Amino acid sequence: MRSFFAIVAFVAIGAASVSNSQEPNQSAAQELREYGEFSVGTWTGEGTLGDDVPGLGEKGEKIVGRAETQWDLGGTVITCRWSFGAATGTWIATWDPLEKRIKRYHFSSTGSQMVATLSKENGKWIASVVGSSEGKELKETDIWVAKDDGDTIAIDETDIQIGGEDRPDIHHEWKRAE
Image 1: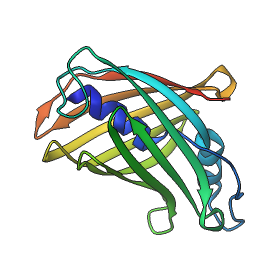
Image 2 (image 1 turned 90 degrees about the vertical axis):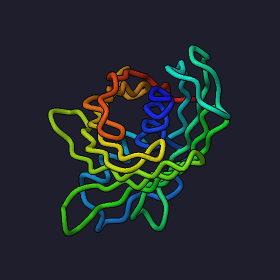
Image 3 (image 1 turned 180 degrees about the vertical axis):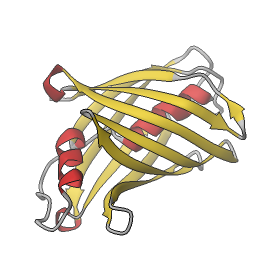
Image 4 (image 1 turned 90 degrees about the horizontal axis):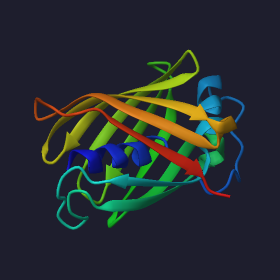
């Protein structure tokens, strides 16, 4: 179940989009514009379930995912609609003017809800994630790095806890769909 939520976290956290039909608005923070350049587009990924997940698959099963991310609301937010196996979800990222950071709000058909606070450090996007998964409190740190001139996003999910229980780190990669 853990690896499913890790993949969902990525999809829900940074995978990407259909079209760049709305450019970011001039008042949007530079950091949000940079995150949009990093994440907007259409992405495909594949993962292997680490546990049995009812309605999704069995341990060891490969599952294919797709994410479409775009600018929305006049360039003030980035939205993403994703699917991964039987699960679907959405996330919305925007600039929080009080915290002066990007916040991303995630919702999935599995019932998971998460809030990620993002920052960029040394060319990497770092997400501090809190929320609920499997009906329990979730905490983790995700590190996203662009590779292949931005056509691949590598994600390392670390320090994962669900219901106070440590879970193994997860690595996955997503390719920009052409």
